[in-house]
Image (cartoon, rainbow, N blue to C red):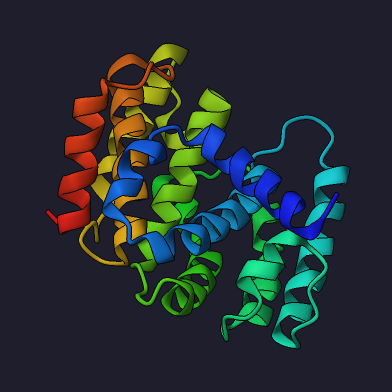
Length: 235
């Protein structure tokens, strides 16, 4: 497989997980679309390592590989296809690689919402610092962490809920944590347009989790278009 085809396969994998993006992409400048998707695809790789179920050893090995890979990006020595698009950006890649081990510790069930955010604070700050260079504007660290925790809840359901939100009625735990995540999710107007649009769609997924307790079907295309438009404007 050529380098170009390998890169396209990673970008397409991310797009398949975020069908909303095909609606929102119209609000992103054409010249920025590929790098935005490459960046979000990289972050998805880290989400997958965090949200692994079952034997964590393969995911841990993958995480160690990524830590080494990102340090290589700082020296412009990439091996991964995503590096072909992202490595030329002068950013704190090594610091992001150094922050990745926090994802292993963050798999442990937190005692509270505060503990869940604290466990990922260093990782969120590293992501925000790199994103400032990749997309031209840094999101709030808490907003990055909230989005990571929201993805974790969507992927793992009740097993991602902090102890403080677990109730005798297991069906109430996911909506309770989803509601609290939405309350804590500040800084929606901060960050680059691409981050704001993606965050709006992630928030939409969490809103549906808060209402129904399980992942729900996407809303209609006009609803997605309106949500993307508002996020792109910074509303």
